[in-house]
Image 1 (cartoon, helix red, strand yellow):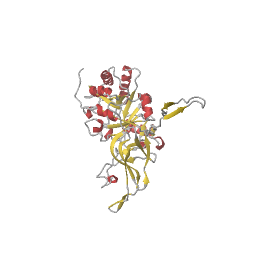
Image 2 (tube, helix red, strand yellow; image 1 turned 180 degrees about the vertical axis):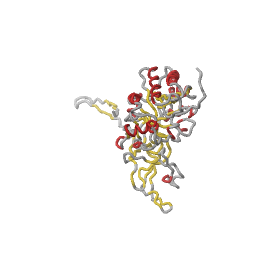
Image 3 (cartoon, one colour; image 1 turned 90 degrees about the horizontal axis):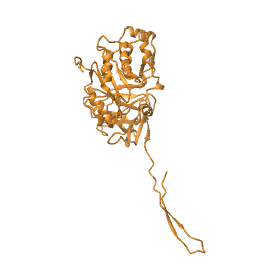
Image 4 (cartoon, one colour; image 1 turned 45 degrees about the vertical axis):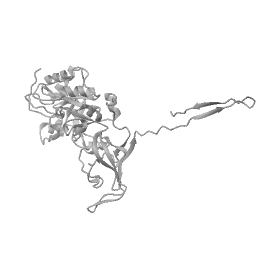
Length: 407
């Protein structure tokens, strides 16, 4: 196989991350006049119990043992244009070895024939198909001869023709998709995509604000950010793309199979589950400061250091701090006696280090529930049973040892 390295490769989210909606074009006009617009209502936000990354050559060589200690799922770039991803072969085999459920994506390049790209993708996978979905990543145009949604769908259909029974989903951005397609010109493609899953790239913390482009009314995956937790996931980049599955943990396992425990142990199964006490609101996780001399109430926060609405944070049962007196800094009350903060090690399924308030300035912010606690096995005494004969018979004595065990 001859691989053309004329063009630089791209990775997922590279263009969606910085995309600015057009102010005016034919697609936008038709969508605004005739297209359906969907949005999650506050009462139906994205479920965010299951989170996992997507990776490519951009993360360089990955320590998959470390990755497996944090997640049991990942979506791996196979390639784009007419070349395989430089890390695909290693990533694909190592992820499988450590028990990670794999999805596969291909970065669609409009300079290359869709059928040619589809054939290369399928050939790279061979007989080792993903445990999760196939995804076409459509987020950019190079002005090539094979642009537009018709060619993108033709690419997806080519993959499905080569692998009967497979359905390819689409990764895209809300504004990108609406700026480059519409339900009238692309009626046939919309009918096809409506029956395929949507993976939406939208970088924000508030899931209730995420918009869903027609023809879909829901998404399967949401790529919500690139937190600086790369080292915790065994990659060589500071940031790593993070995605949430729109369903419960049980939904995830029903769809993809039961999780196999990672080699070398698991995260604690006894923890405190921290959830925002007001629906559709997030809770900040503040960075550690010179605590508690300079309280963590002054620690920095960001859009990625949050317990997102619909998800939860985790803390160890005894890892909290209660203020014994009011804290006044520069004449401002920063904390009140009785305020309680938890040291969080995970937020919205991503590892994190910081503090989040159950009670701050006397006001509640988190609901706290103990998960995984079990009652200790009771210690029951041995019981001796003495048996004797009647009064007219010489006494016969026998001791029976009985051990009682709880069910």
